Length: 84
Image (tube, rainbow, N blue to C red; front, side):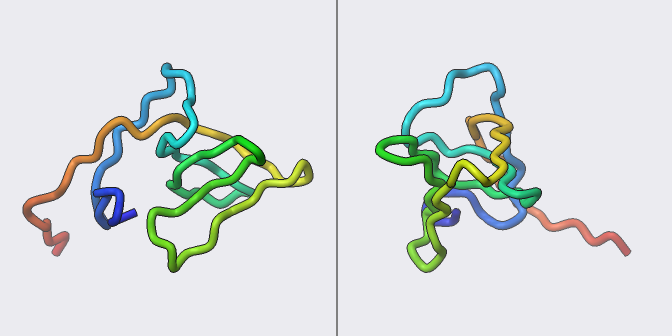
């Protein structure tokens, strides 16, 4: 989601209290795999990546979708931490 300003290693703040709106960036679980994508519901439910090199996920009624919430902010790490 770098094209949306979310970089690898960012910490995402996810708001579960807001009502989902068309085009929100969401944290979702699809068939037991987590993803962060734009949510669109019309004319069909789909999760769209910011990077067009990745595929859009079109959801059928047989797929399991669990929406955790709307990404409200991301925190960029300015210093990497060595764990050694």
